[in-house]
Image (tube, rainbow, N blue to C red; front, side):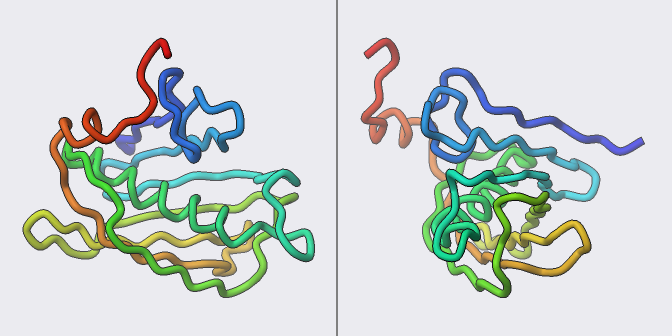
Length: 152
């Protein structure tokens, strides 16, 4: 039986992509496959995230890819921030059909983690691919940089 950890949106998290406390956020949930060392999600984005032509906005596609790559830090118990990211938009991403996203890590150098995520449709067609460099930070990084204080 695979070792899968559910990563549901947390009530106190204001993250646009994965937090439950952001009323305008996407509230994305992921599965973290510990054995395969991959993050996976399955979503129907909905019309609120449409851009031109009724397909997903490019920025929303980048958010989904970034979230899939970012979740991989949990595998090593690390905290990381996105330092660089590129997105290859291959085909339009629908907002009214299920999309599948999967992320994995390809390389590690010092504090740098090099990761990839892909969005596919239900038939397995590649719609978008993101590549990112994530940098490991200490927990104090988030405390010092967080403009949203609890109970404010």
